[in-house]
Image (cartoon, rainbow, N blue to C red):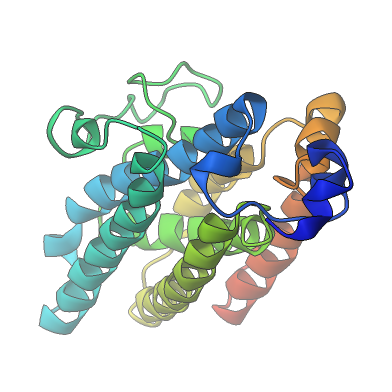
Length: 252
């Protein structure tokens, strides 16, 4: 930390936009919330990669499958980047590699507010299965833009090593969203109607932005772990999604 910490409380330092740089600087409450934030990112990437990997062989041709395999590999690399930071806080990183079934899903028709499949921190949307290649493409268009909106927010986090890691992750995810849009355009050009998949995935992806707890948001904002509230982030996603779907010739 800077010398500002010598003249103000940690809470005031963070509220003023201060940054922490190592586990040694982090108090217990901040540590707990930071680890929760990182675990959600890691678990969602691992679960998302596991689900999309099952659809790779449904891709239309070698190039599409190669690009899809690269997306899976890059999501795993993003997870590993943040998991490494969690390890610096003493997290059991081996559990993520060897002991958890990231591929597990609820039934396709499970209620949107259904309980999660496993005891992990994945976003709820990653509890639902994709049915085929076209369905996977639609899911990745909608979720790809959600991830970009969320990472634009998260890259401002007050824990500097995480902020730096997430800036790199955002560039990767932006490319994934663009690839998904190209895949959607190809589906439509070839005569596939993705309307049903859009209707299925849209409300499930929307849950990724949470229900909005004003008190909790203010607590996290004071720690520099949040900046814009859930409604603001969801509205940004809706705007991006509407544009992406309209560009593909669908109603936004």
